[in-house]
Image 1 (cartoon, rainbow over the protein chains, first blue to last red):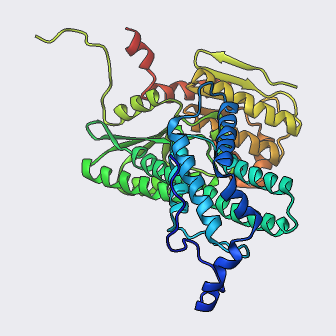
Image 2: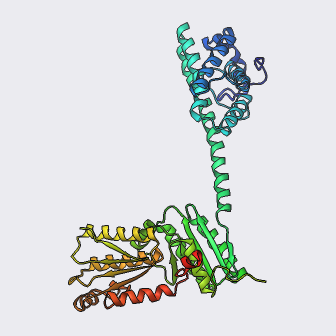
Image 3: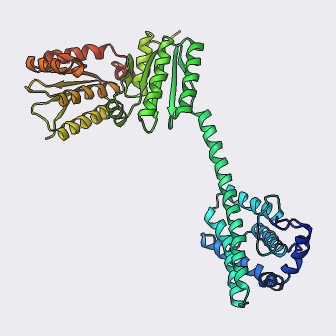
Length: 314
Length: 130
């Protein structure tokens, strides 16, 4: 059910009215504006109309069922907050306090929607639908001083839209940061393939941060296992450019200083052409087309070979 | 004009017999590189016996191609550099043909076979299919 309009201390900062005198003047002026009157008189009607529009937005997205109950509750709460905020603020200023219930409710709603993969478009259009609704009603009732209210409404909803947008982007950005972090941790494993043979499959784009991580992990593993041969598999590296080549060269040079032979595998024809055209020359590096050939080469370097079992052991 | 690329088992054989325009040269390069990757070639012999003139661009193309082939895990040999070509190349700069060279195709193939026999993946197919 609709929450009662909040009558507590003003949730919105009003600039320039901090003096006691100004504070007492406010309520007198706020009583009369057409927007506030409209909201007081047609409150339930407006809410119903907004929910109907929300329903339209919801079904436009390809959903056949009704608006989820949870949405209705949240939108009601947000509506009440907006009404309260409009009711309690003079019409020449509006600053959205991030601590206010309105900001909290809206942020919560947007965050939940962003997590479940709803588009920013849909959420913003919900907010804009309410603005549209209010300004239309204001114009049809055509008060003479509705213009000031319209401009003010514009300002209020600008703030709300900005908040919606930044809340949405924040969720998504946190998501991306988390993913790239986990990608970084996942994508640099050093595998011990055989006694004294290490392998490092490189997957994804190699940037400076990752390159350093790769080099550190590889060198540490080489030292720990006293590896004679190290295979760097580049099958999963989509693009080889100057940056990647430079990083690779450093990694390989460092590994060679520890006394290990380096085998590169899985370079694509395009990659080979780019490396050559960039003038990158790897000295003393064995390169093989596939990981399979690379493993055979590595085994040969330590004098071993995988072959069929000829006679079964007793 | 397209340079034909011949398969000899897992060795590729190309013979450049006419002067190539710049775009022909690039086409030849990418054709060869793609074929090497496609069949996982073990060796490539580039024969330039028929070329009387090799300019610095062509030398660079041949050299680069040999390097690309090596990056893709195959051995590369350049065969049949004519004495006069060798002299002009040296005049132009020592590193123009840094790849391995052989006197003719026959010796080139010998070098390739020898090198391939020393490789780890030379007997891979036999070992796996036995």
